[in-house]
Image (cartoon, rainbow, N blue to C red; front, side):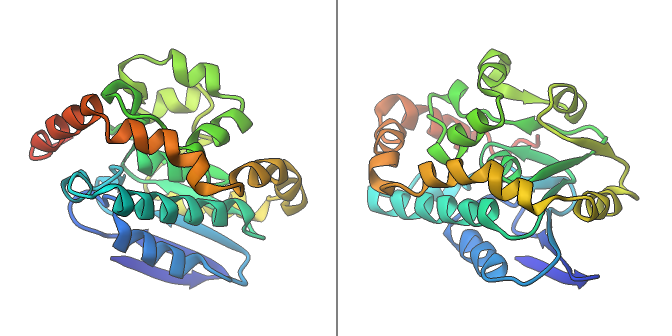
Length: 240
């Protein structure tokens, strides 16, 4: 599920989970375990083959009832607050398709380095009638990208070059330099600036979870959103 190594006190986590590194409770449990209470110089999160992560594992998640979905989103939320609080830099080394929940994870890293080749990144929730969770909306606001995200057509899915031009990805890289570029960003990182920049965001996201996510869950279980989710599940056998 997760392959890890420690190189010069930098932990590298490589997600290798099913066909598309799709997110479910088991994957989030693993990510939380691997990123909790670390004493390291930096963390790099990347994927395998053509995928960083294609987002939520809809084939599983579509059958979750409301308490199960609430539990999934709680783990999703807690994992990324951990990234924002981490006393070291966190880099998303985007190696392939990075969509929906996968791109939300990347956004909550301190840097996003993307492999410069043919794949898609971005957020597709709104076009399918699904609301972005607070862990995404509040981070987008903090990054100053709220108007940009709303203005991008086609569900906010784009090639990495466009994401870089729009400032959603910090750097493009070749396959040979993807991890090396991530190390360079870690070496130049200012942890004091991270703490200062993220303190207000962490305060907002640390408030009552159920109150924050009530609207998200209401929309998720609405007939319109469930219809869209069913259509998406039927399309999963088609490659991206």
